[in-house]
Length: 542
Image 1 (tube, rainbow, N blue to C red):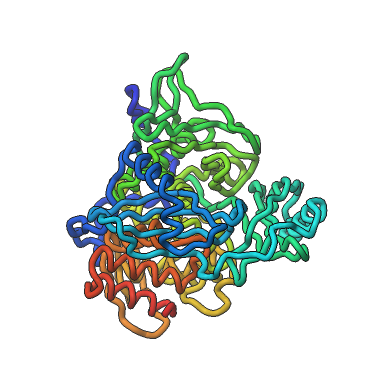
Image 2: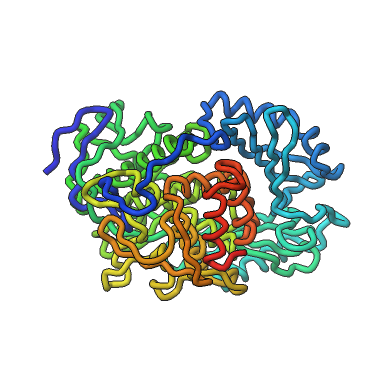
């Protein structure tokens, strides 16, 4: 049954609406995370208005030459401002990209931490190497570079590969910086997901140095979220699924196309969907609802207004392709895209999936960990961590929060979740703890290390029951870990992501960054700092 809905705030009855574990808590949580959070620490980020943020960015841009000199960069290096975070105590954390002789330096990003007094407190760099190359003249022609990149795409099983013109860069993410080419090869991945494969090749030898996929995807399956509210507004003819209260986030219907923007979802009477997947509006409702709750979470918990922190909403696209069992985030369109699942009957438009995909956008705007190797695992885990946080905070009595990812999906066909944060190896592939081979594992499985860390930090080790779900979390060293509570764990991870993580952050650097975050928020002698240290040790990151 679909109730009548008033304009602006649309109340929707969705009987089958949320996928991939959109677990919405009813305030029944037991264990460490049930404890009330402390008052906001002075080291926590503050909410910035669009004008305040723009002012900080403008000031930082005007001072890039002076900042480069302060932190000891070379004469040929310049800084380009990308993001800024301000703490309650007046400390600012300004994130920069770097150029060398006008060329982008990949892996040259850094964060400058500046006290309220203007004194530089420290610098977090993606590379500690001196950025310098003997020449900026490439030895290989563009045609040769393109052939090399397309060959890499073929090996990655990307169909319909079409390489964009390569750009000259300095590759500094690994080892000694070298002159290189970055080529983006577009196409389609084997599961139907669009592909934007970035291939980095040596500008002299043509040897492939690195590659990563720019399209970040996840998995889900529509279930239900009961009665929900989404933002809509009166348009020229009827009502539009556009939420002006959240940066103008709009939802579009691709009508099974695999490209383009799609058509803005509209309705005659502001009553949206039937709760059944055969009504095209139902998937749009779920997508809009997921985007809304994710926006609210970042705004109310972390003071971040929108994915980029600039108060502007993203877009959602539903009904992508045919029988597409996935969803993905794409920076190039600043959008989330959802398939309709097996048989086009189970749209992946869920709270869990929306929060996961939107968080890929937040990560891209902040830490920007490359989507490959250990940094890619951290990127994926960050989306799982905040998807879980959004689920718990949603406080929906019909589907309570848990630490299982995708338990509503049944992709495995046996009712098991996609991922278990308390013991990731339960899925048969994910890693419980770090090993030297972690960087060679698919990012959806190496993410288990950070997922496990987050669970241990939040809830502790051993057996317990939370919201009716039984957990039994082991530790790599047999130690007993005491949880500090999910609320504090979320704040520490967000602080680390936005102020200490960079494009090259691996698990060792993530440990250091999260310890710094805990120190900023709670102090070096705090139980929270010691909890972070213990939780990392428990997943063999020391």
